[in-house]
Amino acid sequence: MKQSLTEQVVEKLKFSILSGAYAPGDRLPTLRDMTELYEVSRSVVNAAVVELESNGYIKIVPTKWIEVADWKAEGNLSILSDLVRFGLLDKKQLDDLLQARRFLELECVRQACAHASPEAIGRLFALILEEETETDPKTRSRYDLRFHYMICSMSGNMVYGIIMNAFEDSSFPLIELFYHDPAVSGFVLEKHKQIAQAIKDKKATEAETQMRLLLEHGESILKKLLQRRS
Image 1 (tube, helix red, strand yellow):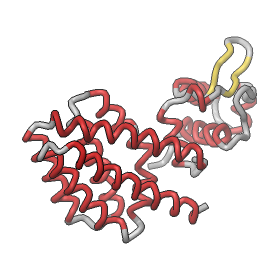
Image 2 (tube, rainbow, N blue to C red):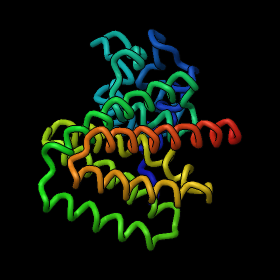
Image 3 (cartoon, one colour):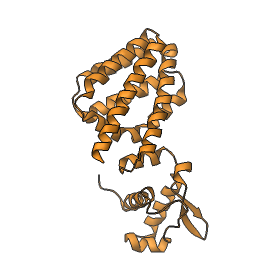
Image 4 (tube, helix red, strand yellow):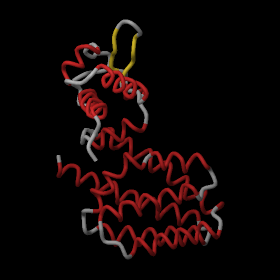
């Protein structure tokens, strides 16, 4: 789908900020200068600025200037997603992302063993059956994300599910890259089955062990793939 003019300006400014062309505290060009720089109308620039401010990229000092925000300290998950999408996620940021996900999912799978309903467990097994027949990397990636989201939802804590769902945009490009390695599908599918069975049997220690092995395997593959790509 073709981007609107506002989206194009937003993308260019996001990249400039995340790549360091504009550092936190730097002032952006004036609104008038940006209309000339990007060859768009003032209304387009105004809309772009509003979006960037709402996502934590910039701060507007009324009647004075626009400056780059400290997005590492004050940003949200959309910035994390943009770092991944632009290929600007550094090693420390990747480690932080993977650590946060591991912390969340190990807690969720423990809670799922205590709180998952028979209906939810049935839906999890049904998802795994669909996953088993799929070969397209992009579709497998969607099944994988859905599996992890369902685990968090089954924890009984609504917020865990919402947080995991918020990770989707930032995680999908990495997971799709992961599934282009032909060695991963069989391992992942087997772990999904073992985790689902442990939840059904209410074996929290086993479920946590298998989830940890799954996540550590994925982290190892992803780091190798990203090193190769860079």
